[in-house]
Image (cartoon, each protein chain N blue to C red):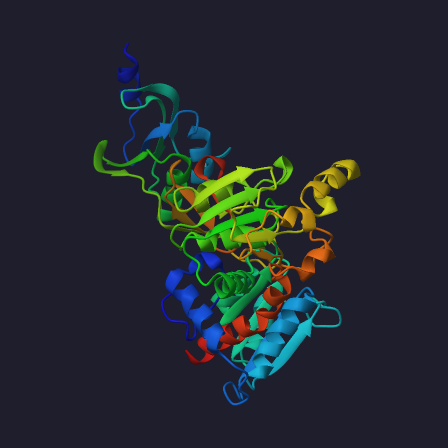
Amino acid sequence: MEEKEELKVSKIAEGTVIDHIRAGRAPLVLKILGIEAGFPDSVIVAMNVRSTRYGKKDIVKVEGQFLDEEKINKIALISPQATINIIRSYKVVKKDQVELPKRLVGIVKCPNRNCITNSPEGVETIFHTEASAGGPRLRCHYCEESVELAEVELL
Amino acid sequence: MTAWRGADLISIRDLGREEIEKVLDRAQTIRPDSSLLRGRVMASLFFEPSTRTQLSFATAMERLGGSVIGFSGVEGTSIQKGESLYDTIKMVERYADVIVIRHPLEGSARFAADVAQIPVINAGDGANQHPSQTLLDLFTIRRFCGRLDGLSIGMVGDLKYGRTVHSLATALTHFEGVKLRLISPPLLRMPPRILEEELRGKIEFEETEELELSDLDVVYMTRIQRERFPDVEEYERVKGAYILDLEACRQLKPEAIILHPLPRVGEIDPEVDRLPQAKYFEQAASGVPVRMALLSLILLG
Ligand SMILES: [Zn+2]
C-alpha cells in the first residue's frame, strides 16, 4: 500500500490535524498540546513522512481537541510552515496556516539569565517578533536580548 | 516616540534622529533656572550605587529648582527586606513627578516604565542600556565637531562588553555618512549580534586591530578590564597595545577629539590631558546640561 493511503486510514472524526510540521518536531507539538502519558483521546503521530512541499514533514492528529490561540502561536514558533486543519465529521472544515504573532506573552523563556523575567520579581515574558536578514527573530521586551526562532525555549 | 513631554527614556533604540536632536538642542541652550522645575520632585532610585550618574541627575534637577528624593544602594531599605520592584514603583509614583532608576537586572527600567503612571528615565539596567550616557556622548561630539553627519569615529579597546560603545554605534546609525572604525583585540571585538542586527546596512564600519587614528574626527576610548581575560599576561599585553599616549596622539588631526566615558584605568596617559584634543573631562561635565535638558523636556515639553 502507498504511504499516502496508509495515512488516510488513520482519519479522525472530530478534532485537529496539524500538518506540515517541520520534520522531527512532532514531539514538541505534542508537548505544546499537553499530550503525555495518560492522555485519554486518540492521537496519531507521523514523523518524517514524505512531503511534496518540504521533502519531509511530521503530522499530528488529535481527536476532540481544538486549539486556542496560545497553542497555535507556540506551534508557529517551532514550525512556521505548519497548517492547522479543523475536522468535523471526518471532513476538513477549516484550514489555516499558522502565523507568528507580533507579540508573544508568557510563551517564550528569555535566554538572558540576568533578565528581570528570570528574577523572583515574577514578570511575565513578552517578546516582539522582528524581521531580519536570517528570518524572523524575537526580541525580549524587557532586556532587549534577541533570539533566533531555532533557539527559542518555550515556557 | 514623537513628543518628549511625559515620555519615558528607556533605550537608545527607541530614539530617532529627531528625538536625539531635540535633546541636544535643548542641552545647548539650557541654563540653571531655579524656577523652571520648582515644586517638581525627581525620585532617584539607585538599586546599585553609581555615584557619577546619581550626582549628575541630582545636580541637573536641583539647578532647575526641583527637588530630589530616593536612595542609593538598597542597604537598610525595604527592598532589602524583600519588597518587589513593582511595589517600590507603585509607592514612589505617588511622591514624585519623574523616576530615575538604576538597577542590576536587565529590563528592570522597561518594567518600571510599564508599571509607573509617571515618566521613567533609565540610568542603567544591568549590561543593557544607559541612554543618557549616549546622549551626552553625542552632545559632546556635536559640540566640538559642529555636527554628527559625515564624521569618522574610532572606537578603541573593549568593544565586546562596553555597552557605551554599542549604544553610541546604534545611535550614530541615524546620522548620514558616519564611518566607524572598530579598533580592538580579537578577543574584545564588537559582538556579531550588534554588528549584524544594529549596524550592517545602516552605517559604514570596519574592524581592525591597529591603532590607526590619523584620519579620525573622534577617538572614543574604553576601559579594558582585567576580568575579561583568561590570564594576566594576555591582559597586560593587550592593554599595552591600546594605550593612548603622546606618541600615539601624534597621528591625530589637530581638530580631532578624544573621548572616554571615565573613569579610566590607564588607557589614556595623563600626559595626553594637556593636548587640545583631550575632551573627556568636558564630556563628563556635559552630563549635567544633557540631564537638565532631559528633565525639562520630559516634565515640561
Ligand atoms: Zn529578557
